[in-house]
Image 1 (cartoon, rainbow, N blue to C red):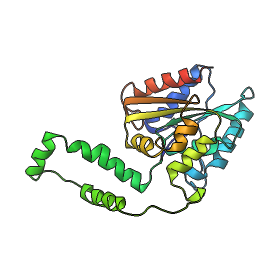
Image 2: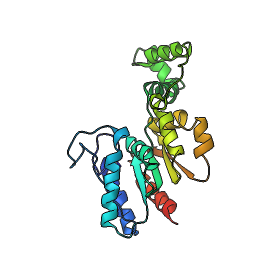
Image 3: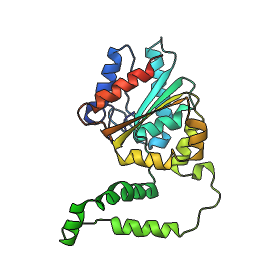
Amino acid sequence: MVGGPQYRVGAHRSFVTMARDLSDHGVPVLRFDCRGMGDSEGENPGFEALDDDIHLAIDWFFDHQPALQSVVLCGLCDGASAAAFHAHRDARISGLILMNPWVRTESSHETALIKHYYAKRLFHRDFWSRLIRGQVNLGEFPALLYKKLRGLMGTSAGYQSQDDLPLPERLVGALAAFSGRIMLVKSGHDLVAREFEKEAESLKLWQSAIKGPKLTSLHLPQSDHTFSEPGALDDLIAHIKGWMKP
């Protein structure tokens, strides 16, 4: 399942490459467009409301591959999050491959920008030299920093129902309800991956219910969000094939 405004080929045809490689090694693969994307009609309901799309795709896959006993859902970004939300609802799903899953909230994005982008610039001599010469555009950094400081002085929210919980907590709750194997892939050069680490992996439920034998975590330090660097996609595919072996 692709992420964002993409159809089933994926960014730089990455999903085509992965599918063909896995097929060449005897693994049946289905790439499909959700509603409102690619060749599928209708209006895209958003990644948290794709249960029907995923269920129908799996139905079709089993109808056309009679030897199938179970499937592994593989997704990137909000496609990974959609797979995570659905997996515990379908007993035919035995595994998840989650590549840079999307858990972004306004607050998490602002924190990631400050910590992993703006903060790094503060330690570069060239940054200060250019700042003194008036050659640096700080962009939204001052406003973001002020907003975060105000937030630290605010009060915490009261009781929240499951539906009102922030996206990271809802996604981790869905993964905790899933009994199959999980392969988590995180890129080194990706704010989405950093947000997942901070907002999802830090949760107590992640530590108690997910981190353990059912989780395989893969960190690709030189990769960007879509594994576009030379060799990055090949490296990812090799790890996926190794993980899928019985």
